Image 1 (cartoon, rainbow, N blue to C red):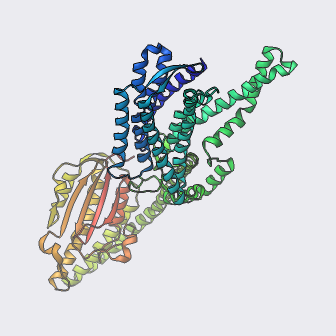
Image 2: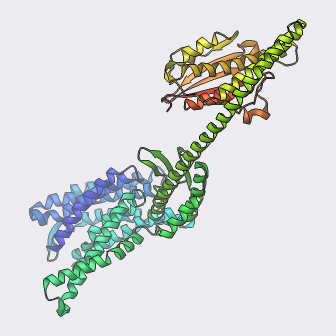
Image 3: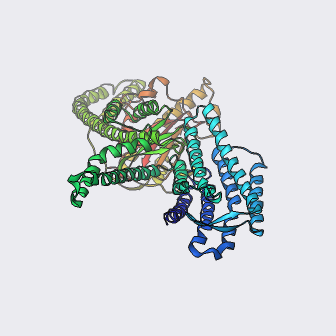
Length: 620
């Protein structure tokens, strides 16, 4: 009765594990082949137990089910080849299927054996001549599969590939266990006067085989294994206490015995869990000191890139394998190294493991725990950066307030002297009056720009068509070309007056730069290049994405000197001889207020190009 209960449980378990493999077939190489092999094992188990369920009159159906064993062995051989990535050419696998299918077909057409009664197992199939031939076929295929595993195991050991070695070793160990279990049937068929106890371990065969594979590809399988091992050990401890209680007169009461069992299980729960953790996650023990050291080391990072670099060094050193860590950015799709990606979502910073399918459970467990520390460090870094940004903004506003007060005083105090100078040269020659007027206008413009840059202002946001506003503003330029991106509406939330101001500053810069280049060409001091000969000197275009609009203002002027590129958007940095140096700084401030940015970009063949980035979400 015990034997049939064990074999029935093994049958149901095998079918369930085959279904699990099909559900996770994309995680492990050859998983579908292994699932088919397990279904074949289930057919074989059904054939062995069918006479005990329904009686010996099912002999013919029993023999048909058992005849599928050689084909099942061919599936096992094919799985080993795929799992170990062994190249047998175009003949190896088809030859295995030909042998297995031929043996199965022959056994189905010619009755391969008959049923006999065994006192320990019940009805059991005994092979005739055809049955022995078919049995030799599935034995040869089984040995071939194990030989493939052993050869791959040796190659992995010579290559010092520990991960691959452990993977193949787990599968090989499960196969050897299966052979040991099947020896129980051999004991019964050969009438060995010993109880066929190896068959009692048959339920563990498919379990060990599947877990030995999934533990390296499906991390949740390890969590299940740890829980199962904890419960098994606790049940064993409870059973041991129950067995010992009759020996102690103190526990003659069942209530006291039950209390002793409960107290023992509760007391040993923690140690048992730690033992299970070490068995399921070998090398994956992480102490509180490890977590504390990781937090301390990662706390020193000041930027996401620096955090990613330090995290990669720490995790790579811990598991002995180079690791790529990305914080706030997407991973490289073509990388062969395991990756830990830390990104923020609606639930905060979260980590994802990529490329860890072949990693042993221990390093994967370490990586998952390490990922939680990286997520904590990323959250702290984000908060620190936000605080620093707010502090910089506060200091900037304070400086602007001081600058605004100074600018207002200067504007007031300088207006009268400028008027006096203008009136004093009223009788001067025309050239003198023109020169003085130009310089007075320059000082007035500088004062106006300084006041506008320094004074506090708020956006008046509304829905605008950026393309229409650019087309209207570009009409003031004498020679400009508009790209195709400006033909369709570009709707966004912005302050139209401030956008107009930014466009005017950039258009005026482009016009002045282009006029300088044209003047240089007229004097023959510089080759104008293909742009000024075949295109308008100023070109404006736009492009829209799912979350932003990019506006490009390009010119064919002399370009931006290298010495001012790094501070181009700071106050008083100008590429024009008569510029105030505040125009681009005002543009940068306007774009920052909209949640966007301005940048000097490269768009050949234009010598200079400024790109405005407008987000499609309204500014705060």
